[in-house]
Amino acid sequence: MKWTHEHHELRRTTRRLIDEHVNPHIDEWEAAGMYPAHKVMKQFGEAGLLGISRPPEYGGLGLDYSYEIAFAEEMGAVKANGVSTSLGVQTNMATPALARFGSDALRQEYLTPAIAGEKVGCIGVSEEGAGSDVASLKTFARKDGDDYVINGSKMWITNGVQGDWICLLVNTSNENGPHRNKSLIIVPLKSKGVSVARKLDKLGLHCSDTAQLFFDDVRVPQSNRIGEEGQGFGYQMQQFQEERLFVVARTLIGLESVIDETIDYTRQRRAFGKSILDNQVVHFKLAELQSRIEALRALLYRAVEEYVDGENVTKLASMAKYLAGILAAEVPSACLQYWGGQGFMNENRVSRVYRDMRLIGIGGGANEIMLQIIAKHMGTLPEN
Image (cartoon, rainbow, N blue to C red; front, side, top):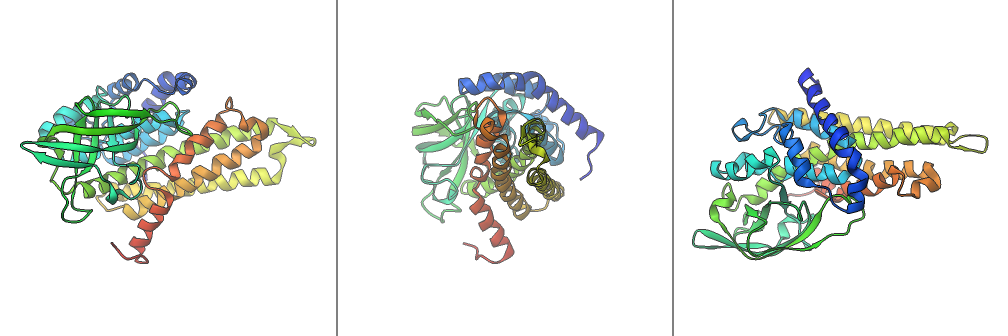
């Protein structure tokens, strides 16, 4: 994939915002257990970074998806994945289906302020009994006049405490099977009957507010449905492709940075009369990990090129997401080992990277689900 001057300028804008408005506050936000989502979203919205590939008539830049990937890759420079995950939800997880299939009125009401950073969105798919198994979710929306009445709950919802609206995947029928009975519905989080059951205490992503949400007879107009009724599962599978490509791109610089920091530290740290880096097992391992990151980048770029050309990249995106999940567990663990006791201290960022990166092999489709998807596309596993 060839980067243009415009790609590089977008990268520079993204990195400037991160350096000036995000990274100086990361430690404070991590300690507080939350970052100011509306303030930061507004800063990124004013810079035009929350709707890079979205239609200009709703405030987007109308650029192809390669520009989203340039943005996502730079988001790996954020020194805590909580912020970059939250922003990724806004740009590549809660809004793709709305932008593609939503009515004009629905896009004006929710997509436009999301792109401007004036409203914070969430994506509501997972439930306690339906994480990777999306088809088994239980939350239900029944019709009542011109409205839907929604009952159920959602779990592990990024931006769930501070968010203004949620793109909710729910059952809207008891017929047609689990892949044709679901719809995506936009639900304002200030609606009567929506409650934050609890702000979740997580292993990592401390500065990202993640919630369990309850929906008790929540009434929203049927006009808040995205696209056709019963097509929500398919729409969400398409949304997952952008989510997974974003996650992979965001992971690359984050992994490279922890390798760079480990090189600096092990060059200075001495044991048995020489620097830790002088041990062949150390510099060979770091070289191996860097090589695998670069291979992942090449796979990502191929997937993005095909996605921009309108191709179905489910197989390639799943491969990239799987490999990102593996490297996200292996690279921080290997690097932390070379920090010794210092790596176990929260004051050193390697420990935060170790915690934050662990989610990549779980969220947005666990590693095992990615292998299942790949196997189906290879013809080694029958379609359901």
